[in-house]
Image (cartoon, rainbow, N blue to C red; front, side, top):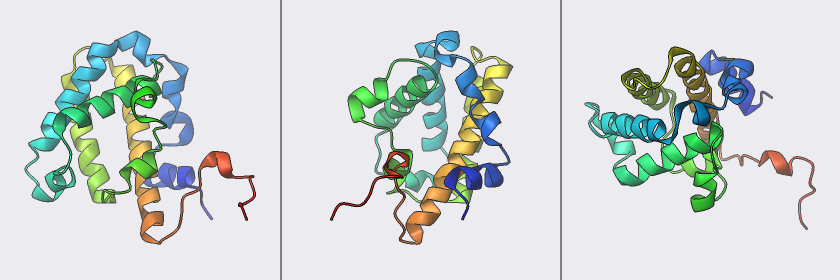
Length: 169
């Protein structure tokens, strides 16, 4: 059985080495907090203004300002900055936090479309950083699609830290 990371690599076309190249550079130090806030603001403005009702409806029960904050805090934390997201919300647990939403391949592609446009519109992000970030985003989007498919098969997605622990009686 393929792992979620293997499925994400296959479906996204981004291998794990390229997806996690963001770990080789501290993008938070390189770009700074205002750049991440700008990226997330730009992204969610596009999402909430999307012409496709089916896509906008995914975010209908979310407050735009909260979505922006959640996203930039996660990005900052994941890309070398302080653990803003975890301090406020706990472990990111991406699959679990996205469980209420239909994370389909179509939704992932639409999300990625808006993220690419947002990245391209933020002048402070250099081309190398954009490439690293987009590879991470693409792989992660399809990691979430793989997690969503497991959810739809009524399977539980175990935490990677629980792999060798016996179940409680």
